[in-house]
Length: 119
Image (cartoon, rainbow, N blue to C red):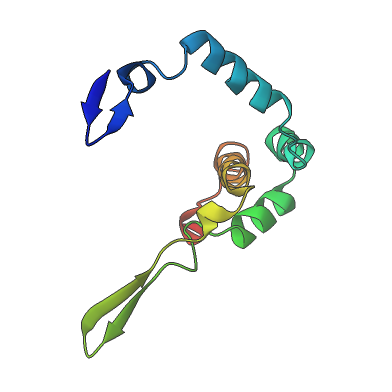
């Protein structure tokens, strides 16, 4: 114990505040109670198999290759601001990008199409 300006500081509270075993139990309890309402939709999108050329074209056309909201704000030829990509805030972003990739792969591998127009 160290005495500093009439206040006592106990070093053991700073050195080892929580044991690792207790922390692991708390993390496990937190993950058990977490409810993910979008998980069935995520699984459905991940398991969706592209077997139709029209569907593949529709998916590749409507899911953008890059975030359409990201912008640089220019004034008199100088960049004064930047709007960050907001697509990453979408909870289904990874599944939609994967679906678009599978659609493009189907168009190239199975249909032999040139996908330059979708990029």
